[in-house]
Image (cartoon, rainbow, N blue to C red; front, side, top):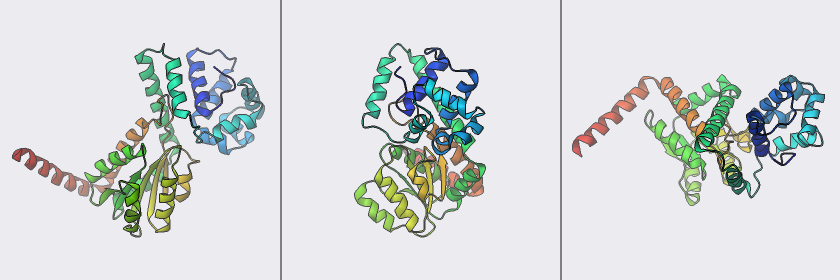
Length: 296
């Protein structure tokens, strides 16, 4: 492996290989534990100075500097820059990740799936630990009590938008996707009313279209629930509530496995919040399904 790791994903890959014994760099147990914590919580490295970071990771500022230099960086500032630029995806980001998979062709299918499972667990663990109960409760309340709910996701994020729309439609009324194509978005935005809820999915690299929609929705006095991948996401500036679900992993584009798990949990909690209303809505759905089956 090339040192220093040139971006966050390469640093994450180093950590995996170090823990598996594929690389043997003389990192002390305490420093390795601190590095694992940093990689699992990259935003804390990006936004904090070395003294605060040392307090959070339970090692000294000097130890952080030594760790950075051991990895090949000139010092803490260069090391921190990798975390700050985590959301800036280079133009060859996806192809490079495929090349990395090809380089690791010796990994058998079981190993590939195990790595993906490990990453998904780490992403979900971050989501559980770093999003406060207050944020989750607020998200549930918005989904359950808003008069109308519109959901938007651009490109890959549209898959998550559809998962949430399907599940939410089963337990409440007035849920729809916010425009299917760019030429219809202006019309869709024009139909929004004050206090409607718009749920927006987005991960790095963040599209300008998604950021513009979030800003426009906020300007219309609508509520905005953002589900994104980082505390540094530009979508957070426009959010009524923001939930962070990391999307990192060995997959050559954003890993959405943790997003799916989170959505299922969020919908389950929303159904509980709605109570009898959710039960009644599902009973109507079940009756319609039974009638359709009987008439088929």
